Structures are given as structure tokens and as C-alpha cells.
Image (cartoon, rainbow, N blue to C red):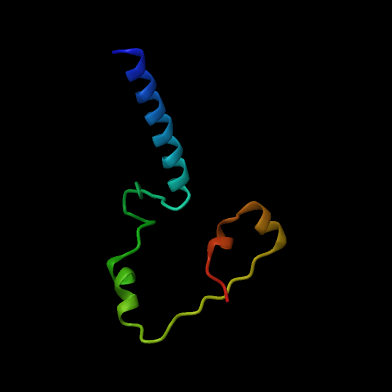
Length: 79
């Protein structure tokens, strides 16, 4: 391999790694490896939205301490 090829492969690898890091904030994956699938949503729960005719509003309360520890609720759509 020539020096030019090594440079190109390195640059492409770094670019791919940076792009993967940028996308990882939007995409996530959780595997349920428990024996009885305790943390997996059932098929009934996944299909429940088809039976609902009205929008569902979820109200949650977030303390100031929790806001600093867990930033995930900020990503929720709010009114």
C-alpha cells in the first residue's frame, strides 16, 4: 500500500467515526437479554396505538435535581 492510500483510508476512517458519533445521538438500541424478556414491550402494547382514537397526553414532573442528572426528558416534545 502506498502512503497516499494509507492517508486516504485513515481520513475516511476518521470521517466515518465522526459521522457515527454524530448519528449516535439520534439513534439508539437496547437489547433485552433477560430470560423472560422482562423489559420488552409486548405486541399488544406496541399495537395499542391503533385502537386509540384520541391523542394521548402524558404529564410528567421533573425536579431541578433530576434535570441536571438525566437530560433525556428534555428531548420529549412539550407544549
